[in-house]
Image (cartoon, rainbow, N blue to C red; front, side):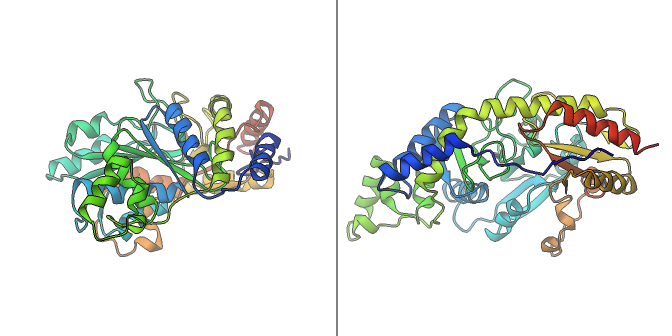
Length: 390
């Protein structure tokens, strides 16, 4: 049996990033949110193709900030939004919805792009369900097609969670994160690029961007764009403008140190994604037809966060996981499976029909993918897994 050193994640911070940090630390006296964060935000906006971006402390806080600002700007502070989202998702997305008091409804996902199934959306439409927000999660580097959502609910606000899918392309050849009102990204250690911890919110709506600027920093008016700030000061002449809080807020700021890392990593991001995609292409073509694997999502337009295994049964999943672990290949469940099975969702009263999400929960897992994985490793891995069938 071949042995691998194949962890789920590997450090991508190299000498270039470390030297940039050292130089910055030796030459700067400001380390909290400041000029470098603004520079990183502008460079990210250029790369993503959005007008405005905000660097925040994580992908989770990016989601929280965006949703809170959307509710305040388009609805009211007390509105309980009806949010439609995928049942296979990251836990803190749903925690945010619950913490903000919203009503959450779940759709099932397909095995092609991990987007909503036609049957799942059709069921909601047929009973007259009208969501306020559709919070799409582009899972594991695969781009959802939003056309069906827009066709069923043209008035709903679409928000895009792209935290695991930087640079994935839609069927129209455009980067995900540019179709909805706002989009979020994560720069966690194991994602496509890293600021160690960190995230980004992007939008083309200047009003929403301005509101999020204040909310990111405690709700302070001095973080707003100049015209908006002056208006708020006129509306509250009895408050010292240095500490004027026109909106509820958070402390979701990141640091100049994170921005320095982000600026270096961003220059490498296209190359990182290209290598991940080559790995995924070889992975699919090495394992397609494996008798224990149910399906392999097509390697088109994705940015290959991981290398997924969708097995034909729970038993074959356990056999493959055991063999991989014996070979030194680290495995993880497919996200958190069907979120409705998690203990923190036990109080959820809805019982939607989620056959694929349930099957993914019991039969699926993934292994790590990054630009350090080699073609030879993938070929050797496939050969070993074919041997374990016989």
